[in-house]
Image 1: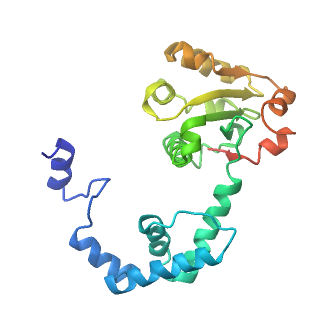
Image 2 (image 1 turned 30 degrees about the vertical axis):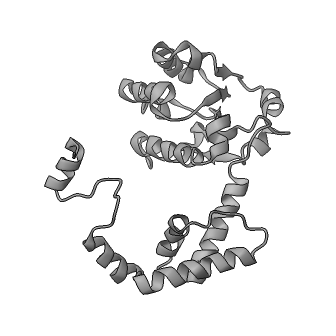
Image 3 (image 1 turned 45 degrees about the vertical axis):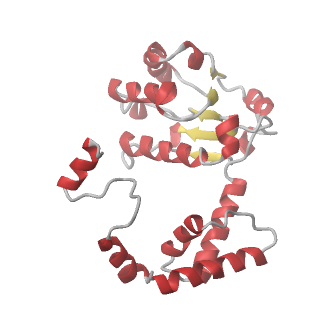
Length: 242
């Protein structure tokens, strides 16, 4: 039984976001643009697995579904695809780090957000993508996420982007829309301007989430005690300016 979404996509000749099997036009597109054929795919996957096994320190999934994304990204050039895989594994290894309880630590630097270059729609989309990428890890699904938000430099310019529409959207994400365990949300260097946003946001949050939100002013010692040795080191964990 097809859903309204599937019917609407079919009427517009759009593909749904999740495609169970590739239609013929995409198979042809993969061959023309990515050099992907039945004859090339299987040997390329075997070569990728051989390279992974030869790299003793490299630990990653070996399933076709995982490796094929790197081959497609590099048009089935196995050497380039393997290099991309190595880079990806290195990033996952060092970015993000985990705190002592196993939580991922996400650092946001809102004062560096250039709203004239990236509007709030793109900023929130990027943030959700980062969070969902984190949640692919089983350890993160179990241990949750700690968020550190550095508000140094946050001004009226950024505040204007937080209209009631987007404050409501953020509250829904924190409450019951994202499959994420927010273990703690910590704000540093907050200003009176941000306190205005918080006064609106707190009205639509559950008590459970409000109890996990903490304001620390310019007290970097708190950050040190919570996570790493210095605040500058924490800033190297998953850091984004939005």
